[in-house]
Image (tube, rainbow, N blue to C red; front, side, top):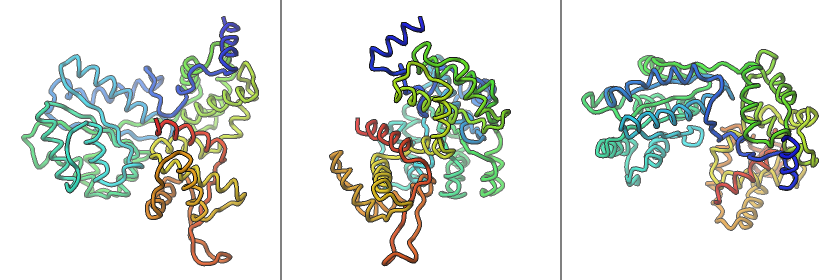
Length: 406
């Protein structure tokens, strides 16, 4: 059976992959191994939404490091909740906002309204007016919403205490209203809550769901699941999966980062394809580990939050760094390359002010480093560099550009 599948993959153009997208960060599996406890806790916390909808505005906070399953758990939970709500004749919507991308209160509320699909004209309205209009829309249509604010620590730092207070305490002003907004907050650590006033902080900590780094056996199960979905049968042996799990498992000295482990499996498969190999070997895994800088995995996740022009600009930075063969390049050279790339893709380039804002955003997201030039340069300019390997980064950017343009 294994050889038949390998022959089939050869017939398709020599690839070990049957569905590579299963290994991408945005993929949400039908079943989530080793996050059953967290899912049960969320079900318990949000139970009133099914048994007595609108009686209370529910909030939960998910805490844990990078790659421990917070985001995917929120998505799987919401999918399960929507199914249960439908069975109970409750119209429940799910909204997922990444606060790295939508950084201000206005952007967050706008994105919530967009994902809900409420026909609210946003121009000229304050965030408060927008949110009240949304509440009226939900009331008219008898709808409820679970809103996940991902990278919430970033929102706290950017928008501040008043914005957080406004979002989560709005119903304090309308105690008799049906509570149609519910929240899941996702943060890497709990210390950022110290930036809030004590009342808001205690409000946030009422329902805390913690995520620990993955152990070897847990990563093994996760990788087996993804392998069976992503690769042709017989192309990735269990020994290869175990090797990756041992490298990444927190109990074996790794970070316990599932995202990183899946990224290694992806690049090992790509290495096999590049060589025309019929199977993924441990040597391919070694090559993948050598390619993947610790920051590549994190940045790969962050890229999903960029819009088309930010991706085009990032591609321009990479191209300029390669062409100049320099550790840093000037923003003027990058802009010239960016305009050329826009022309290639048939899109109108953004003006300098917007490009500069994109540069600052990419810097805040720690995808690039940017600084003002000092000695050795005529005048003052912004110098840009990228510390992570450029080739795998550019490949991922190209994939996302094509998706954005569809």
